[in-house]
Length: 472
Image 1 (cartoon, rainbow, N blue to C red):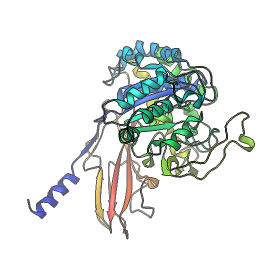
Image 2 (image 1 turned 60 degrees about the horizontal axis):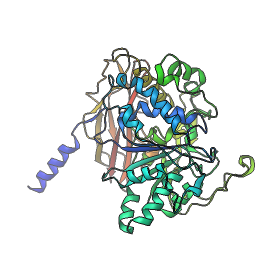
Image 3 (image 1 turned 60 degrees about the vertical axis):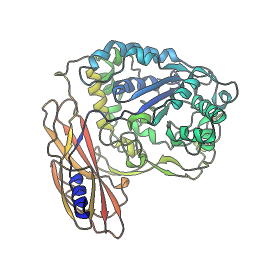
Image 4 (image 1 turned 90 degrees about the vertical axis):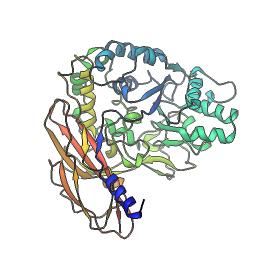
């Protein structure tokens, strides 16, 4: 094949259409560590988690301790939520395929030691939970294992301790590199221990035993600019708890904050925006950057809690707090911060939650389902400075026949180019928009996001990210 023919073939590949399907080509493997019963929010998060359980392969549901619950584990409380799921699983299958059976999920429920933190790590400290984590780590499966930590990660720490002490260094390193961890801050001393002793483990966290700097607070806490109505007690009662079948009935009232653990898996949902292998791209679960954060002891002053450990300096880079600039749809003011990386999507992920709760009791025709985006070109484009292209979502459909609204916008923080763009940002409902590549001195990336929202009830949104690489 000649050089010219090769280039022509590559150009054709560039223009191949991309469809954002309801299911990813390869499901992520997901394992939950939960200090359920320390706070009602774990039970809340399990309800939402089960509504998306067709989108991943569930590897474990493990009851653990935390700084909030140091001498108890409660696997029976996980089973209580599964008992409700058992009654509605067949109805969920009317809406999307792949929902796992009750028996399958029940077999994944395990428990760690009823011991706090690193007291459960070391020789002779194996538990049902740590052995189950170890089994998942050693499984002959090339896919990453996502461990979402809602309490303390000491069962994971014990599994890693055993890997280190039973496998060769090279074999162990392969295991570490398949691991993906997201912890909801630090709820025992095992999290910092893992980050220090296993530097190749992919780790997402706002470090610290107090939570005043945490990104995950953006899911529901009343931070300035965020929509408080869709996380209110009234909204939850109307859309989740009351009149929505057995699964809604086991969703408890909020005590301290709604679903503080849910951000650990929001970026695993297949919505076209999320890319869990690239936390810096941003998504429903927030945006995170990879760096060595400067030490800041959060357990001091007005945030100090008696008998809690002091924060320790990080010893290596981690995926941690990043900030977005967002114009709030609520008050039209601009806000900048790390919690903005989650609350900017709050209405959309809450509507999605409400729609799936309706799926638990209603027929397909009675419910709304998300639009299916189809691009008329690749979602990876390479342009020269000044080159123009028509960004097009021609062919996008809605399974319920609903009318749809389109919005293209640049996610500036996700790309490297920070300058001005020749782009009709104000255009609110165009499935095709012209785009002109800016003039650059070095190769730059621009993340263009297509947001498609249907006019069903509740309105549902899906996205498509187009990454444009601009050459000089």
